[in-house]
Length: 475
Image (cartoon, rainbow, N blue to C red; front, side, top):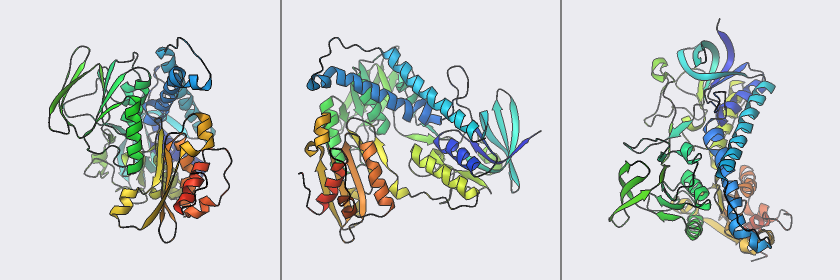
């Protein structure tokens, strides 16, 4: 006997599980299907983000930063530590515990909100105007029906041509988070978010890290001033960053990987690594959905084709997150999931792509929202800018971390905030104020006039806003 639901969500990552919870909150009978398994074969909802992405990487970034501080920074605070040693097994165990806590938390939220959970892989059997049949293949095979379906199947790491991930020598983000020994020579192809974060983790733990990036500019999507400072700091820390390279043949031996490449001057080079992490982007997960069988349209890059409201080519079938256009960010997926659930319920869900924050959780952290200076120049937008360095911030001095700055970009005539860019301590938290301000179409003067606690890192946001008008008080 088929089970009938108002909404069935295929995928339990950030977009999927949040969509399911919101739909249930709105009084819709809701099910969520997810196939992730933990080490014991049990359900592990949360998608890439929770299992092999955002959450475990942040756990290792925090642990490795503590290790780095114990070796180098604590002495400045009058804390002398001798014979610091790494227990990598315990560090990885803590990471796994954090992941499981998040998995269990999602299962609890499903139960709390009366979302029916199915552990298995979901795919379309048939799609008709009056409903959709979904097959679930798990420990048993069963079918359910739904008035509405939300596809939230996420993405997978993109492999280099003819170089598969074996997760032993050639690693995706999955293998990069699970190395049981610290490789002496670690190679990274791709200087994006994943590459820089994973490079930072293993560099702190003792690896000699070399990054090979095809693009000629470092962090090209980031504001140029921030990217320049980031390159300076990462190089100072010991990351070797090669830009403008062309990757050639990659061969794996028994215990090492050889990468042939051409550098930015056209000279042939060869590098040998103990491990190689490939982080050159991600591809949407649509294999196994039976999209062709039911006429679900994909675009030329393999993403599920959707309109501005996340509607697909099929009636009452929606798609959100990494499997559709737009930035591959967990919080973007969450916002789309909530918006779609509300649209199904007859409400007016909304996602503002112009105010989605971006964060790179390195040290220093990098965060931004809105336009970069180079974008404003290319669009011929008249703007004003103001910056404030953390070295002039009392709280940053007390923390012992004065790297970086806050930068505001505002419309030259209206003073409306067009972009905010931060590199420095706790940038991931500080950016939220800028997001709120931009959502309310605030001016830099609005932030400059708001009282900020002293001493706090957030004062640097206020000071940068003041600097737009050339009246910073502490620099």
